[in-house]
Image (cartoon, rainbow, N blue to C red; front, side, top):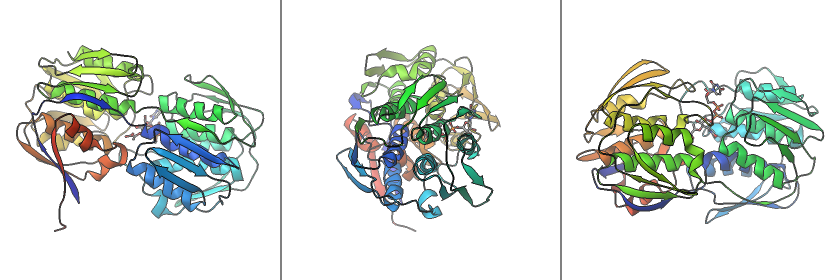
Length: 424
Ligand code: EPU
């Protein structure tokens, strides 16, 4: 069982480069399965647990994979359409992204329901709705997702919600279909755009990238390409919060266009944060005087990202006044507040979607436990700002999505150490 032991209040100084985006690399990895001949190369691939879990699944299907120094090559020439068992897909919610390529390439798919962070209901309905419109024949089953053999055709899909991975699944399936598929109410997150860019390189015509209407002209045979994964804007936002709340900090975060986080920077500035944005960087300084903001509401892109709701709560906790937080997307994303209470953060959770953060707070060191990826990172940030020595348990959640988090923080002069505790 690994933990982080963190001595707080060491000023963060220097430059950190974000890794490739977790939420971009997974659909791009799924897209490699659409290539019948040759090796597809992805660069700037983050070395995180979710990537390794996803690789295990594509290898199970028979793909040949090499992953070294952030470069991943996949040869999917000889993959087989096998049923995906729960021990593989149960580890990672994004395994649902295999549905699109399998149905696109083979006309059928069968997998156990995916697992992942426990942050809400996260049903498969939006995915299956999109695939059904393309002609997929879905069998009712409580334990498995079963798509019976059949032929898909291009169609006009109106998504049931602006779901990120459901849009990506629709794109992955449509990429293989000659004719015109229209995806309306599509998600437009930067990682969806990155997948579009990769599919375009592979020979798919896609119009409307970055908007909520995508028009796709697919091809049966897609070509092997080289594609660089976009930098992780959520990682940039995470480090920006760290610099804002840890006394004496000043850091530059590089590796992604900060415009991806417009709504986040707006809120940070409104709270009194000190931010200078560059083309591919942001410089953020400690902000000694923070104030509560007008209500914080998570939204689909380009709104305030749900993945930064928990980290941003620390800015609000340090701020003077009370902020109402409205988590409009997930119903399990306030669980971290109970852990933060141990660090003297005051909050009131009204219901699964609404909470109050009551500032100002001086964080105190504590022994705390991660309950999901972003919650885990939030506890680390709180510990960096707290007086005293904290221990954060369950850091395997953090390893899922942040590459070498402790090492990057150490390079910024934080006092954070990974410890492997003997099982008791
Ligand atoms: N939702 C709505 N209305 C909408 C769109 C979504 O209520 O218009 C709800 C959904 O019902 C669901 C939640 O919002 O409960 C998230 O929906 P979505 O299907 O978009 O999530 P996802 O595709 O399963 C991806 C990311 C998540 C990220 C969400 C939202 C990947 C692999 N995962 O999940 O990433 O939180 O989009 O942006 O891309 C993370 O990185 O920590 C993470 C959980």
